[in-house]
Image (cartoon, rainbow, N blue to C red):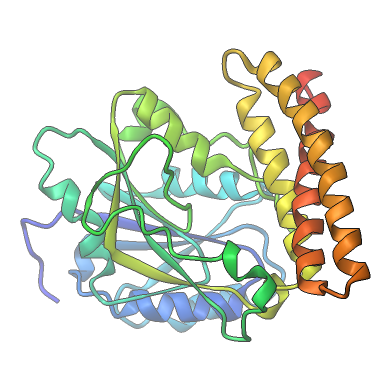
Length: 313
């Protein structure tokens, strides 16, 4: 595709760790993007993968929007994101997961609000993220998986809503204003502890910038069978609670708030354990699993609150 002078340069940075099969599908979608090749840079930030990630990246070297592999030795998602920021040459940076599927107009839809923003008030845009389950979705976890659906059209979202890190874009210069991702809130290897994207969104809002949602810039987020097990759901609940505590502990008034949350979650843990026991006795196994996951989330709060109050992650 020939150059279009009115289109900005865009960098897509995909952070990946040992997920070559999914990465191949994501790169195939990016190769089909309806965007000038000389204005779209594609980076694959390889966070010490031991699989055939390098070979997968090489498969696309001769095609449109050929990716460049960058090895980041510091383990962790936010280390990889920060390497993407450092390497990016585009005016806008899209941070994308390595397991998403997108339409050919995905890049255009993500940056469209920026192009119309003459006052430069937008600091971040998140696209819609729709979970898909190629191996099926058990009934007992359906209620925890749904599209974001913050609004039907492109526009700002309330302070209660935060786009997902799987599909986020920023003006490159915003990082000079608010800093890069906090690596203390980081997902490393198999750990599900995280929260760096939410913390970044909060910093952008604190700088007086708006956070927008672009439903037309949707992606399908693949959720394999390994993410629909009871073990995964429980670990995700536990680590998500830990992440929220670690993030909240950095804000003013954290001590009083976290102490009340500790008491509340102690009661929740006991209550959900009782609910799980009753449902197990009457053979309502799905309801028992749901209660146990919710109880394990409460345990995540109980584990992390004392650690955060003592200054430990």
